[in-house]
Length: 195
Image (cartoon, rainbow, N blue to C red; front, top):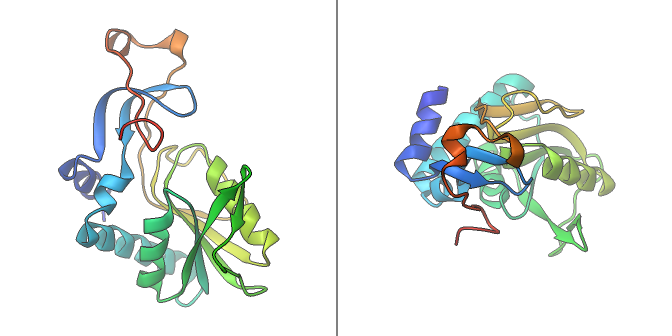
């Protein structure tokens, strides 16, 4: 899938929002990607994740992954669908007292080749924390993946990041807003904002 095809899936489902958004980081942006809105459609989730799975298999080769682990909450649907597309089990890590941990009886076989699957990478913080959790639990992380890399290649990991597409989205400090944003009230979207 080409970048515009991916973004069209987001536009058609109302998952690509335009306006003035206050991000969790405290920065302001004219664009917000609400990935859950595109993933709520199983056919679209399958289409996007199949395209990402193809890209992963092209890069790593077939059968290079034993298991998919994703960070909760945002990565749960993507992780499940990536596991389905790659024909491997999928599980998720969730925050316990501020750090990612495996719960619900999830265990990573020692040395398992793991794909960390995320919906959107912005700064890479959650992805890095999930990768650390996988390693602490005996997994060998072979790659990180996401549907959209909001940094468009600027975020680096110590494993390859395989994104379906990159999409550089501007973000500004409150005291450096461009005039087109300064005149619009900021909305706080996401799991902690819009409901």
